[in-house]
Amino acid sequence: MAQASANLNLMILAARKAGRGLIRDFGEVENLQVSTKGPSDFVSKADRKAEEVIREELTKARPNYGFLGEESVETKGKDPTRRWIVDPLDGTTNFLHGMPHWAISIALEHKGEIVAAVIYDPIKDEIFTAEKGAGAWVNDRRLRVSGRVNMSEMVFATGLPFAGRADLPETLADLARILPRCAGVRRWGSAALDLAYVAAGRYDGYWERGLHAWDIAAGVLLVREAGGLVDGMAKDTNPVESGDIIAAAEPVYDRFTKLARGES
Ligand code: IPD
Image 1 (cartoon, rainbow, N blue to C red):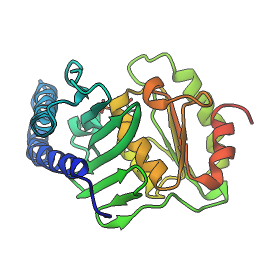
Image 2 (image 1 turned 120 degrees about the vertical axis):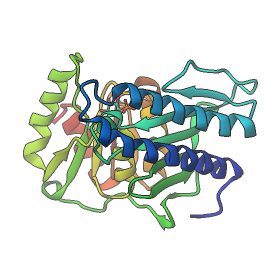
Image 3 (image 1 turned 30 degrees about the vertical axis):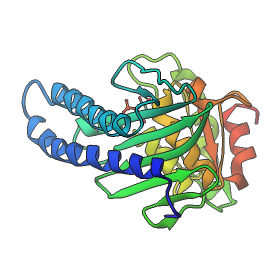
């Protein structure tokens, strides 16, 4: 990776520390699958513990920054221009079911813009990093979004609304428009990794509604720094604020966004 700033190094350190704890806990989950209660209490604790580890590392070094995490109430910082946005365990359902596809996501926002990002997949030992203006990386390799041009060869990712969420009909309509045109749509259950995979050129694009800032803040910067384009599902909106996101490699961006928005 290019010369990392002190903040990015701090984020990497916090993610790796939380990752070590989560890997240990993930090992336990398999044993708990067979108990009648299942592992859900255990996983909620693991999730909270990971957030505490990250919060402690970050706030020890930067006591004036704000902190928004999935597992706790937002803390406003003395410095109102900077805040951490953290999902200690994105892909909780995968983790809970013993499926090895989940990640830690940490973003730094400055004056409303994401300036540094880390998405860490401890199972595959892939750490995705980006800083504004300095590119995106996975471990030591520079990331570029996909260069594919034929939509029939492309693979897209999304999330499917669960637990009675109201946006199911919209998502099913999106799928009916997109699926016949491409090589496949994946729903792997981690928005952070979906965006990291767009940045890595593994997916050609990704869209999802009803997310939270912590699911996507880091991924937004990764995609942009890898040369991709990101917007809200509504044109010219900020996905970190709305929770509705569309991201794609540049060659397919216009075609894909029109399809996903039902404009073609
Ligand atoms: C979830 C994942 C998933 C998405 C859900 C999110 P969590 O985050 O990102 O891919 O479809 O909407 O809630 O709860 O595992 O942090």
